[in-house]
Length: 458
Ligand code: ATP
Image 1 (cartoon, rainbow, N blue to C red):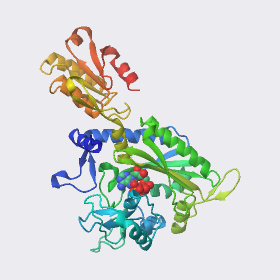
Image 2: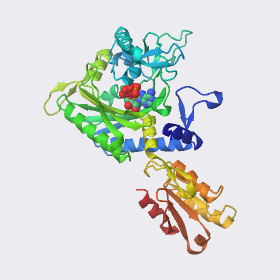
Image 3: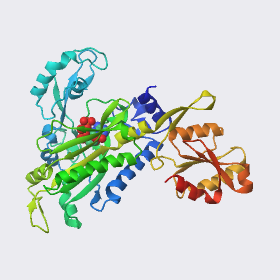
Image 4: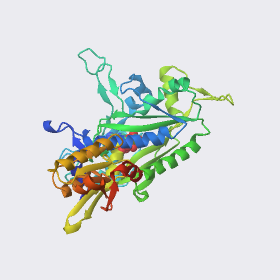
């Protein structure tokens, strides 16, 4: 079975993810969330926010704007150095990332390499690298391509390139430049963190692998400010917390792996990625980095504003060191979908496709069916139950097609529970509750339904 193909097609068929601008022929590496996709994404964001903000006394939230002063991207190093090395296959004109091509033959390029250096490295190995699309091995020279996306916000001249502003390439810069605001407006004391969820934009060269790598995407980032001697201890704590977070999200531990960065950027103290076993192999899901005092030092230098912190007890003065956790919503969604996707042999030899989401991530918690759609008394009773439950749960009413088809549809969108209203309901006020995973059915009193659902969805 081609798992990636099956997930992609289910996402479209059932309304999780659509290619952007499809009726216009599509728009490369941009995707839209359909009705169930937006629910799943919101549930993922809520789980992240709960773990990173709600359950932490030492972390607060932020929602900074997408547009910022362009100098921020100079200070961060993005204008000068945020680039990927690009080569083109001379045969089929596929554009590919040289670091990824090298990785496939176990050569790991250093992020900091100049264009000349990466050309030299690629020249040494390129004869054994085949184009993944046409299998030829004929490459153009490597060019470094800046990933920042430019915009003309506030530019009323004809010259598009004059004083560009940028759509943010990562959300964390908005956190760094608000560090002082948060500190001064709250009672925060180091160590403390700031968390943010928001859109980021990158001119990604390779636009494959569905929602794994897109040009517009959403990040969930937490930046934790600490003293120089706390940094590595807090870093280890963060690594453990993030690993546990994925287990709590229902990801099997065998599908997670640590990847330690060998070629660290000059300021980084330590960098690990959590990789997930995607249908195309283990790839980065989240980055967890110890960044030293680099970010605030840069912003202090470029803005001219002092960003140091004075410890209330020791009176020690320093620029806070930062450790970060950074993950994409789309990438988490793909991991969660991969983990949940199951094909099972059902009775009669049919294949049952089911998304076994943990209940907290399921887009729809329960579906409510009248057994027969052409019996008004059943429809009316089912509607009444639905109207009651919708106050507390994301539920769906369905009276289309036969009951088997309705179950199949709910299995494919990962609904944990189905409630069927039949003729017995009208006399004894009980309903049938069907479990997605075991397919077992039980009778439940209508009056207890809310509590039973609450219990089962825990
Ligand atoms: P990669 O090496 O895969 O390009 P990166 O190391 O540049 O990723 P970071 O800048 O560390 O990624 O971004 C942090 C997280 O944001 C990543 O782990 C990933 O989950 C997410 N992310 C980054 N780029 C994209 C993208 N183009 N599409 C979707 N998610 C992304």
